[in-house]
Length: 279
Ligand code: HH2
View 1 (cartoon, protein in one colour):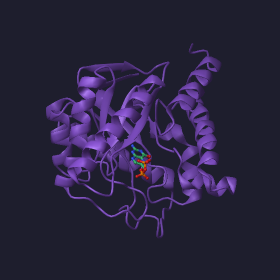
View 2 (tube, helix red, strand yellow; view 1 turned 180 degrees about the vertical axis):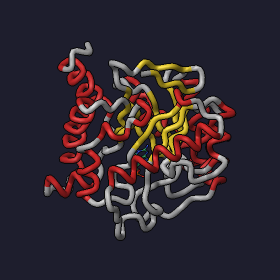
View 3 (spheres, helix red, strand yellow; view 1 turned 90 degrees about the horizontal axis):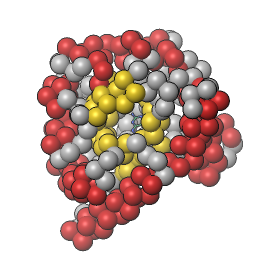
View 4 (tube, helix red, strand yellow; view 1 turned 45 degrees about the vertical axis):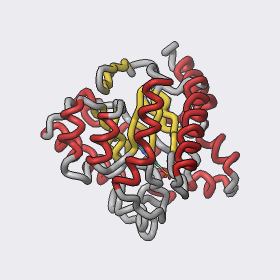
């Protein structure tokens, strides 16, 4: 199973990738503040690379339930300096831009990003063209509704079927826009317009999202549904639940894990791969 992104090519048949989350979503934007944000992001990036991250996912707009949208100029102002700096300081690591806006994706790819992580699954009709023109990798995610309201009343007749049908359709739209199939990965979008039960149903059926045999990306890191199961809202509890789900997800065939805590999830993936005789 190959995934291509820019000039990079990964063979995912045995070894999964860990995508470290690098959020650049500060509250204030004085010049001094921005410089400090870039420095802080680079420090965090260095740590994640040392712990074994294959990809860094840079996001300039929070997508937490209830989060307010950010315009494209502001999103670019946040992410571009970090992408440019990472290109020189960490040329070995692949960079993903977490955005739903084709204009932001375009600028990020020009600045050196290799992958577009689109939580709207091609909600912006120009996104497929931009990704194709740059030969970028594309993570297509499912979301019901918009971040501001998506957790108000999520509803499905059959969540697994509906999410996989959406991903199938959007994957075809991406290919019609010129994106090579080998550049696509699919993400069911845990927590994006889903109740606790919807998330669990998806997690029990992860192989259903490997459409056309493409890799599945999973983002459960620190999400609140785990706090509900554990009856413990502390981040520390969610951290260990994330590690458990990385091991479980790896056993179910997931090939890319989007996480905040890189080292422990790298270990979970490598240990599970050893048990699957992939060492
Ligand atoms: N989850 C978040 C953001 N981007 N991308 C993919 N492909 N899959 C996900 O599950 C996913 C994602 C959640 O974002 P947010 O709640 O803003 O926080 P953080 O970026 O710290 O995870």
